[in-house]
Amino acid sequence: MQAFTVHKGLVAPMDRANVDTDAIIPKQFLKSIQRTGFGPNLFDEWRYLDPGEPGQDPAVRKPNPDFVLNQPRYQGASILLARENFGCGSSREHAPWALDQYGFRAIIAPSFADIFFNNCFKNGLLPIVLPENVVARLFDEVFAHVGYQLTIDLPQQVVLTPDGQAIPFDVQAFRKYCLVNGFDDIGLTLRHADKIRAFEAERLVRMPWLGQRTL
Figure (cartoon, rainbow, N blue to C red):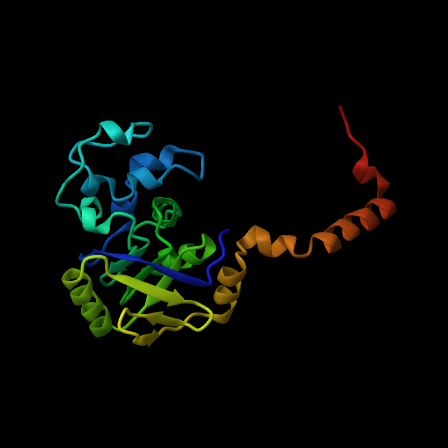
């Protein structure tokens, strides 16, 4: 998992409340058994004018010119600014996969659905909860300034605005540790790889039949 320490990026505004996971990555794309390739279908039903199906070439589809991520000023955005209850709906882990694979590193909103919030941390995506009035002010600034960027300093737990304002945010210590070090659940386990190998070797000495293979 990609580590997250300090990130500076262009902000894209998703000016809708209650954005659910089926909007983030529609159900037909959950057929894939891979964990990759979801970025082109992020917000698929809003992003394109034609119906989307797995395996389609995005280059031949009809983009919706009114959708925020299709507007030239937000191309290359890596921070998503959202309204309350972002990520509600079903618990599909494909939603943070799609956001990450599109290029987002962080999402800022007044509130998130619990399961989506947890899934973000497990997949290297930083969800930041800020007060609703602060988020509203950030929306105003994004709309007013082309190329608006924020800097997110996870070790210091602050969002830095272009005018130098530092906006603090909370993050649970263990989740912060995992993100800063790039540890997903497997990575956390592999920290103890030497102990695991030693245990398996010792167990095999005591129970050698476990190493026997049957045809």
